[in-house]
Image (cartoon, rainbow, N blue to C red; front, side, top):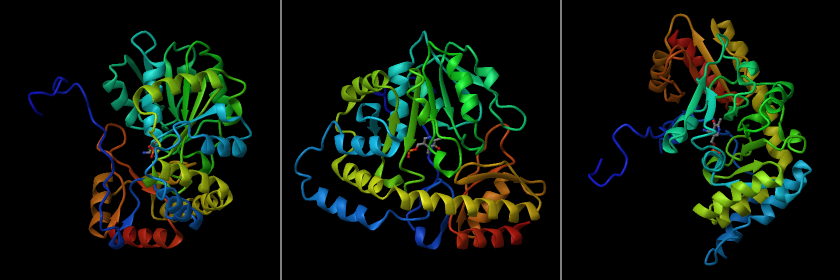
Length: 351
Ligand code: PMP
């Protein structure tokens, strides 16, 4: 820390991303919930074309992508805005909807960035424990008078709320925004976007990073009634009106043109998830029911850290969190069937 840094020691707690090694050819990378499938070919073509015009600024309104999103989700473009990944939209949501009076609330075991942002913006925060089975209890969120952040399905647990449970939270918090971060929704959970027209306090945050094979392209999108989107736009235009670059905008359009390809890949990943869960269960693993492209699993005879380190020695990367309540577990991204078979063989030799 330099003498010029204007924050006190310990005031911030920066996010630590999962390992991103560069020599991935020799690795099976199952640690940051990326898709094992590359983007379709039309993405490469669209990016090349956009590169030829990269001497000009990109469209700060991102209209072409918003129009495509509107047609995929049956809404109008003013129901959407975009971020440089959904992480940026979460940051905008904190800036737009949390202050000293409203504060924020989220689960004890959930996406780590919520805590990072609540520290960064000095937001008074309620941390609400998940139950013993790592389920979020909707009753705990009734009438909270806080801005609520819920990852649905949750990470790293993989468990999902139903739409009825989400509605219970929305109805009982009419004076606060409820953010449903559905980064993993396309792998099997109920999508909250159809609730947007019904609830003016619902903000749904989505990403192209998982189901749409575009983690490196950094595109996230927010869906809400136009008045909430206008608030996010005020924040976005106060920070960086060109937050989603021309190449990523072109790629996002190409991806949405080919949406079925990505949704079919999600169905294959969901099958591979069930396959892996069954195989691990036969080896004595306990796995939480997952609606995502990862599983959260533990074994009585090997700690989370031992499994993580053992697999790393065999060139398979998974994620281990050295945190209360979840030290016994590893989070494993679902890949191709071949990757799952290689993982199962490696695990057999470890336990
Ligand atoms: N929300 C959740 C629950 C996540 O797990 C992640 C990925 N780490 C994100 C949001 C952020 O994804 P991105 O910024 O790549 O869109």
